[in-house]
Image (cartoon, rainbow, N blue to C red; front, side, top):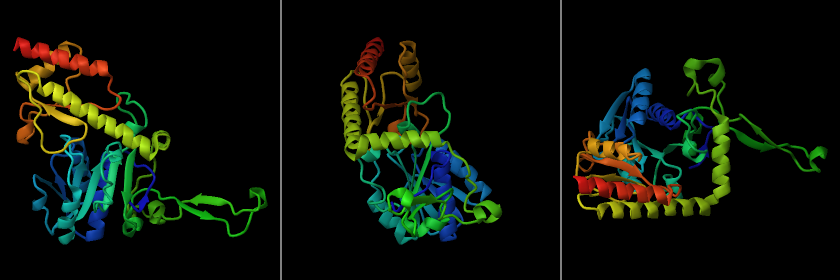
Length: 323
């Protein structure tokens, strides 16, 4: 993307701000969310939209997005782990004047094509997972990037870099570099009703930790970590699918999250795993997607210990035998 601003509260509020930006730019009064999307994100977008007098439509198909929508919000990978083809989606949306907002997993982007290269207009995300282990909630980091044409409509603070006009003796005779809030309207402070956003504080410690992680890994390290997550998740899914009574229904290519359907109902399978001291994954059996019926959603990453995967496979085998 062309420009990124300072961190927002979290990924969900960053996505909501992206919808407000799209509405301001297009002058349209509705935003659309493409399922499956994280329900927390959908709730926050709905709350922001109601306050701004916007209608929120939840769509099962991107084809339902039309000329009354300011944007379509697409999660990448989606809530059930599938990888979305953004390029074809962007072309169809832009033909109707609809902006594409992509809620991207920054870790998965080590392997996937950049949303901006695929045609996304605004990209948001949650940076908390790359800032250290989660500790029962706490502060988050909302990522927000957009094309330069939307620069003056972006929420929060945008820092510009410049150099002194004259050389500085204190800097070895070279012009000093300065960073200032140069790309921000005064309305942000003096006339709140005209501000693009009233985001004023964020957890900079989390943003710093995120920056350290991404800089330490670098492009190659991030790609290697993402590839390892992909390989280990797919290997785990294959091992589970090989067990009697189990299947791993797919909705197309996926990254590191996958669905598991067992020989007993999802709630019972989760309870049986929990009784064995194993986190059972997320019960998504109530979702409308056919592949999610009576299924649990699991995730395996480069940080998942091999012993945890082996224990999960052994427990599932025992549960299957008992069933």
